[in-house]
Length: 241
Image (cartoon, rainbow, N blue to C red; front, side, top):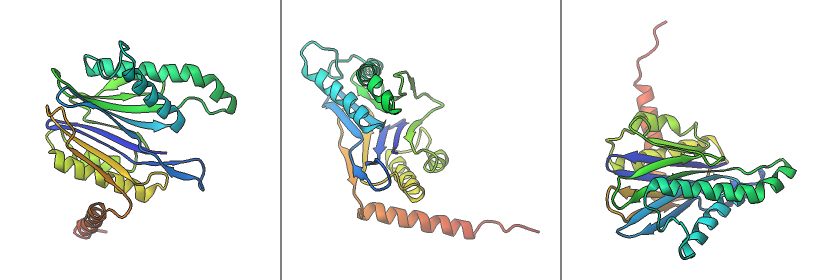
């Protein structure tokens, strides 16, 4: 299982993912699920992946290989984020066509989905959610964020706190609290947590952090949040019988 979040704000974009993968309760490992494609001053593109690790890595490798091929449509030369979404979708379908028939022999099937976001010079930032079949939807005024993986434990705090007008700093804190809540309730989601905050129109990533187990800031944030929740609970109006 995994947990990934992409958020669109008036001031920019936020991307976060955990790094835990597992093949059974006694076989846990860590792999980054955040992929960054950038060319300073021209484009910043971020992919968050969930699903079968072999499938998602194959899609990412296909995209990076296309970048290395001269004249091949790629994330490097796509003219818009919509075109980028189409390229990711096509890569997903290529991998599924190649591997899907073999995976079904073991009742596995191709299982990969992505959150895609970023900005290309000349257009506003955009955020997409791509499904296993390769189809996708785009965030709009009524949808400020997308999640994949183990979403239910971290969703409430995002709904309570984040609005399109929320600052990047406040939204980043909220996302980290969302991960803390998820990890407390589901062992299949775990650190390290990868986080990128992208500032509107900067066309450069200057705010990127990885929170490993025992990270002092994350530990302090978790402690403060839990103490605050308990304090608010004790001040709730008593039930009258």
